[in-house]
Length: 217
Image (cartoon, rainbow, N blue to C red; front, side):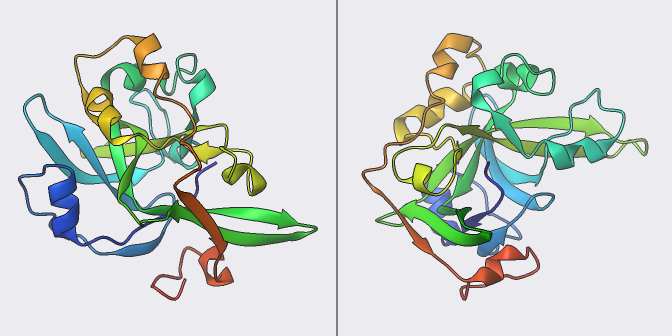
């Protein structure tokens, strides 16, 4: 599962890294991004990258109640082509969800210890995500997303039995390519990222509550 993450880079760094030709209006550094919140994502519109905010928790277009999004914050990579909630967006609506670290909770008896997992060089990276648009009764579209997960690498498995799919930089363009619909090629990207360049360490229990925010986490 991936239920919390961070994005603390400067917006100029994000724009340069992902070749954005737009100002990230409203961008703020975040140390405790949680489900149901608006999160920064990138799509390709056919000619260039576009960045915008999507509500975390995917709501399929056919949903009867948008509350289903609370249950769809993650999509298991192993079954993504089988689940009605994800199989169409997997073909047509893939996105990058920008981050520079994520949290998981390690069990120690009855206690859960919050751990922060990131890269040793604190690089920006992207989770493989899916997005959808749900038409609300008031005709105001609701744009939502989910983070794809996979089995853990050697580092994360000591903390949790799942991890978000982190794309390698050279894979990002293929993931965003709207003309790519070959499931086998796309599924090859759904793999645990190698652990060599990653680190994990314990952080403040303040992160347990999504109300808390700031560098002290």
